[in-house]
Image (cartoon, rainbow, N blue to C red; front, side):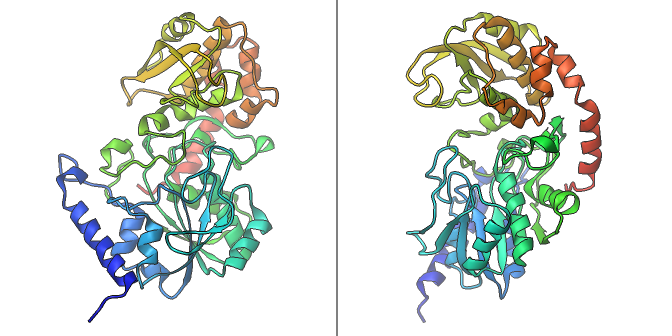
Length: 412
């Protein structure tokens, strides 16, 4: 009896997962490991997808623990009728930089049609789902834990479009890489809604993608989608990514490591300024700077005595983006105590001190900082000379209200 190519690939993928699962490298010292939503879906024989024409919204992070892509694994398995793939910002295979996508094409590895979701929403996206012929849409993308990381709004837009098109929606969970202990930062004012923030959630939301999907469906979508979520097993809200025994795949070109994600929800605010946020370096969002900044910034930032972090005087030359090819001065963040570190408070402290020590400081003319922080308040308070603790205190009421709503949807 001979196996089909799909059967051989499926068997190989299953054996690979079993072999990886038995390796000491995949487990904690205490023997615990995190099983992703996809791993649990596969172990259940893809039961939620039985008899359905399936499409997957994913990117390079949609991998098994042995680094096989879930699209390749599902395509090779006769138990799944996978007929389409939907790519977000940066694309399904991850070839595009920030603000880009891969467009419509047929995937060379599988022959599957790949549809571009980036910048599409509402009925236009619903029409793509209809044209694709799918009945059930599966979402599996690694998030970074920040409101302005666009994959969670791809999730939101796809849920909304699936409801319009009459499709089922299944969300496979992955860890919040910076833990799910708490929500931090200002809550979006709907008047400032964009693709870096559709709905009023905190800047560092402290939720997983399945929890966000439940929140979106329960609180924000005017037409809830038929939703099913597949939770992880073994994940604890206190877990940082390196405690999960899962492989890290950069979810976007400038999110190379879990360390990047740790600082990102605070230092991404520098996208709203004329300073480099470290794009074009080996440490994006950990290195910040501009021409004309010297050691005074690191000294001022350290004087704030922010918990869990120190700042080193740093010089670097970005290879693209702001100050490309120019040597700039600034700081590098060194987080020495993750448990006490507050990335959003740190980001505010860095903005305040950068403006104080560098006469060239300016906001982007389009006030992008308002879209990132969710209102004009941070910008106007800093311009008025507010101290970091004053700025942080200003959002505590709305944050408390969001935390109360958030609590209803937590699954771990």
